[in-house]
Image (cartoon, rainbow, N blue to C red; front, side):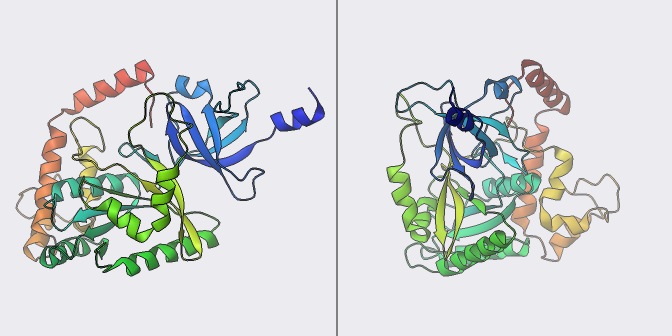
Length: 346
């Protein structure tokens, strides 16, 4: 091995995973690293043994793969470490997000507030700042205003938008530019995603806000999609916002979030995931108050004063009931079995 080969083989590059398909990963090097273009990488086998699945958004270290093949689409780099995550989501599979924009249509389809509140609760539990985006305001302004009132009252930054008329789009773009600038000053980056039910108008909105995004998604390399064409996956793209850039995930739409099948959060943490409940916790008449219907419940009293939307409390009860369908002993048993089998964790 020559001196140049030794230097090449010992080179370590820091970056972020932007996409993973079929065991191969695209990694965007951080500014100042020796590489500029995205790198096609495999992952060390130790990750599987340790039960770790690398995710888009992960901060990683990458090194040249001295055992790589010679084919043009063979990965020439290998992910050697995954840094500790600030947060992680199961669905969509992402890590280290700064913001998640929860997209709720004012109509067509009818707004599914239970699914929206499930998503918000998951984000609160994960420590990701939720931003509510109400779309299709041009089709039903009254419904859009009602949704804005519900979630603004709950304490969420809420934007009402129309991708057709452009209403509200400038406000959201200005917000993104502001947070991107603040992140840059702190030597960080904004990693965000838009998520919502299928048909919420997310793709149309993203095309309106970020015209270059549709070009990137249309021309993305297929190197990591060997064999049969892969269905849509979660991917992070660098998109311009003003004179800054953010990383934005284009996530597939979903139809439901199953709290019985997936252990998104334990029942005891649910009240803290409804932020308008938080100033009531510990102030109820009974120590073990479930905030469902008890006399002297501070949450119920706040609803009576119009400070919590009835739909939010109804959905809290529905989510709680869904979590309780699977007994705690069964959840514990499943977790022990997963650990015993060394199933990959995210």
